[in-house]
Image 1 (cartoon, helix red, strand yellow):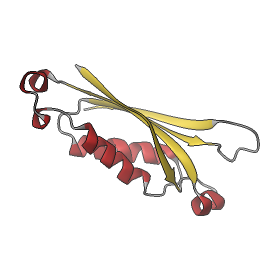
Image 2 (spheres, one colour):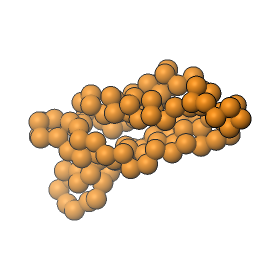
Image 3 (cartoon, helix red, strand yellow):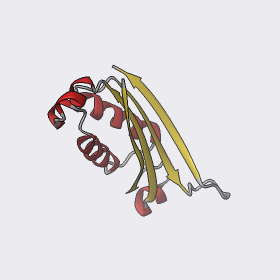
Length: 118
């Protein structure tokens, strides 16, 4: 098995339950771990035989542009999109972090993580 990690992808989005978050927006960081077999790709050296992580990035970018109230919903959409569009994907782990969340105190981030196997 091969693990492909897309690390510290930064996005600006409008995710949150509070009206202010939906209007003003916030910064988010997404980390994804994709598990696949690379046996064929390692022999052929062809992108068609590999899990295309550029395609994975574009799927994540698209999902991050759709406003949601909950980070759990964003994570679920990312997983759904990856599993429906990346047939070589066996397992995925996604973590979405909201930077400086409006919690009434100093906090770097709040994160939600989901994992799924095919």
